[in-house]
Length: 402
Image 1 (tube, one colour):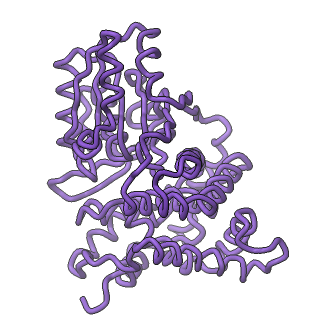
Image 2: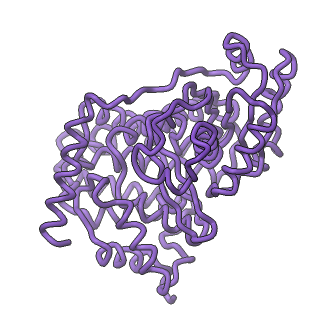
């Protein structure tokens, strides 16, 4: 990257860091039981709601308790259950149409990050009917209060229940991009571990590593403060202590509850301190090939940590010590190396591959262009990269023999 571009990126990031204390960040109010939602809606005199979820979650019966509870208190519930793994503009527009046709007054997002992101942008389109989704891309393009939004995460990974971000895919161009606005932060988050019990192993694995990526990218970036560092440290320690147990024993209530808390803490951290190139590249892979976001993050994370080298060594070492991976006196080099190896070992243990088989050489130019546009100048990464340098990272992650 040229010197002038580096100076601009760091100046831009510095301005945002300086503004952190005065920006209108907030956290959702926390509830711990799905059964509390009908009572909350009654208190707010809401009689009609839109439930945004996906066919898999609803097919497993996870929304049954909520739907029955709403019916028992006379609250009408329209259900949109067509959300796909990387939610599209089509999903958003279909959900918005159902919201308006049903006369809904609030939105309940019930599922993983895809359902929550779809619900967020649906709310944005409700209050901004003349602004198409593609014009919401980037920073602060909504700036208007959404209808009451309640998020119920069924995976412990995305942290979307507490963030100002939503990621949407244009299925026509295969471009996946983030939308960031304070209005997208849900009003309530329901951290009920019961809905995560028995989650399939591969979902537990990839969403858990997704949460780890949020914590790590927020922590090693250059826009942290004491609060976000503490949130990232707490998230990392909880993941280190609980992910393997949750993976091995999906019915373990303590591990499931702790992983939900980890995802929430990581979400708080990156919502204020941002993510990095792992996410920028992962978004492009999701848009181009439909690679699940958590899976892409898990594969990419060790590659970027190694590429950053000494620029993130001290911070990775701190995370390793805080989590209890190494003794307090361990050198930065050894502690950071141990941390990266643990990431690789966890991926291997949970059958997460170390390459992305879908990547095609011909697609790298457009994907690296999207990743560079997303990451620069916003993401305060340890080492700045331009499009050409990011293209090299795609090649490293390609399945050998392609």
